Image (cartoon, rainbow, N blue to C red; front, side, top):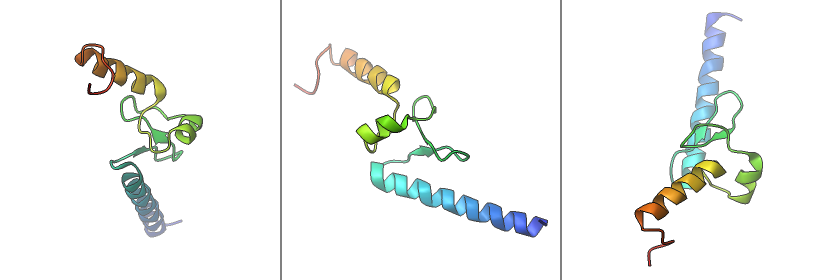
Length: 86
């Protein structure tokens, strides 16, 4: 494989990745992090792969369960321990 073929292959890969990211934006309302090698959806907080079971249970989620819990706890602390906007 020569340099031109490698460049073409890389361009096709990058285009595919850009399409994946755009589809993620449409689905979630914001950018989703996608691992370039595995194609896994990554947590926006810790950038670790989100387990497939979580993605099935919470389609469109952009955080792993531990990071989502931590964010919720931080939000509750800011609201004085109340859930929601009451």
